Length: 165
Image 1 (spheres, rainbow, N blue to C red):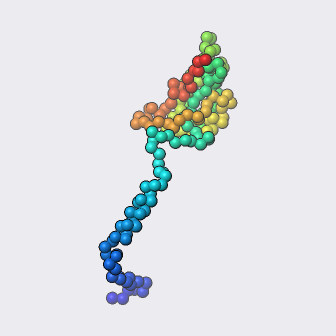
Image 2 (tube, rainbow, N blue to C red):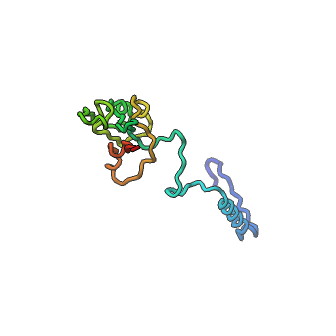
Image 3 (cartoon, helix red, strand yellow):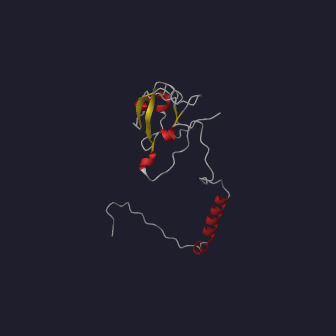
C-alpha cells in the first residue's frame, strides 16, 4: 500500500553481529561508566551530619537585636512592616511604663511583633528599612514543621537572648 504523503522511510533491519547478540561489550561499557562515578566527588551532602556553608550574603531567620545595654532596639516604627512586599510582619506598639527603661530603649516599643514565615520571601527589605538596625536576617534556615501555627514567629523566637557580662 502506498502512503499519501510519500514521507515514509523504510528502516533497514540489519542482522545483529555475534558480539551484539551476547551483549557483553554493552554490559562492560555500562560497568565502566558506573565505576567511573564511584570515584567522583559526591553531589549531595549528608545533612544533618554535615551542614552546608552559606555565602556571606545568605539571608536566614530574622532576629530582633538588642543594644549594648541589653535593651530591645525596635521602636515599633512600622517601617519594616510597610516595606514588606509579602505583608508578613505585624506589630502592635505600646508605651514604655516607668521602670521598664532597662528593657526598651525608646518610649515606644513593639508589644507584639510577629513574622509569618510562610509568607516571608526573605527579600531583606525589612532589614534595609529599619532605621534603628533592630532587625537582621542573620539566623539559620527556618526549621521544618508540620503545624502552620509554628511558622508564625513571635518575639519569643525573634529577640536575641540577653548577653550577660
